[in-house]
Picture 1: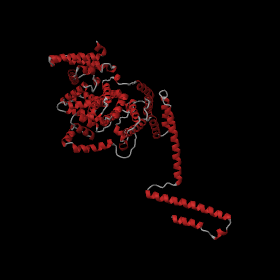
Picture 2: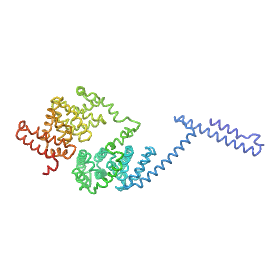
Picture 3: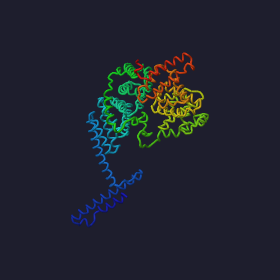
Length: 583
């Protein structure tokens, strides 16, 4: 095709008899015609080459006029994004505590006027540029920037905080792995701490990263652990004291093993002293600890998001690995999020689990599950996991790894209670497992509470063994403070029948006789100052005096009866309030 085209042009260029004798004007016209022919033929050759190359690569051919239109749109889009970037950067430059409300309001308007993706990308880029610097960021300025994210997270939507969080985690992971001379790593870690302070994420993420740092335990790791504990240590203690206690134990073990690896032991000792101060709730022993700035900004956040409604449902409960693997497993924490690649972890887990159980669990266990009416895959999986666990801690970990959500997660408690009640003799394994779940999350406490209420309404229909097992389960949960005495608020003490009197007498007898005096005071004091529980307090006092102590001498030895009376006097004083205890 190219050869033919150039032959045509050659014909035009070849001298003819007329051109030799023609006028100068005629020669100019011929020259112009030749130039036009060259331009046209060159264009045809280019188009032909493009078509051939596109055919070879399998791409779709785009005509030039469409391509020019797309380039124009792209140019306009770039201009618009540049303007948006300058606008957002200008707002962040003026950010301070007094104008937090106006700045967050302006950004909300921008979210309404532009696509959320563009706004999330622009805001995250601007915040990272402002906060992640080679030098240490002033703590006040850092808190104000993260507070802005916290406010928008509640007022605009959780995808704002989720997008920023993912960017911070990925950046921190990259900087931490490759090392950095400056303070970038510290600044990113402080951002994560304040995202927890301002209720963007739950404690799970913080505990995840702290456990990873304790696992590697270098000098930089110790420095980062101290930085995190200084910023959020007491909040972690308040939110999840058990996990913090386990973390401190793990850190102490790791420090004793790695003691000889460090020439300077001062930093390790300081870290352990800080952890001990957290464990004992002693703020004075942490140098430079000042909770006032964070508390002041939290109050401002509550004022700004009150109309939008804030609560734990907006806090992201994400693990460290979930964020880093988001490209493969999907961003399940964002509603409507799309992804390509591997299927979601939860779905694949749920699909393959029954097959795994069928291959690893004995037919005897599966037959037992069928007899216990575990008639869904989820209930059967939970039952088999409980039955094949080595101890209650092993069962707890395996049940959490099932990855159940919401309604499915409640099935753990229902199956656990069924198993406990069906045992021929009481097995404390179930009670300790139940306590572990109650300590882990409040939502499990609520599920247990509703489950116990359902059983309480049906006491007269329970077989004797089920009745006895329920008594011991409830008594254990009350003794270990896994559940509050307020679970008895549904009891109508004025209309008690024989099964309910028998149940309450058994539970309170175990509670009073088998609990340490100190713990007993705490259990009953917890319900003493709540004005909504007045009827419960009066009902308990009346029941203890009338049903528990009246015939105590007849059914017990003299020593047991005396102990019961002493404990009953103590809890009666506790129920009357702190004033009576001081007397």
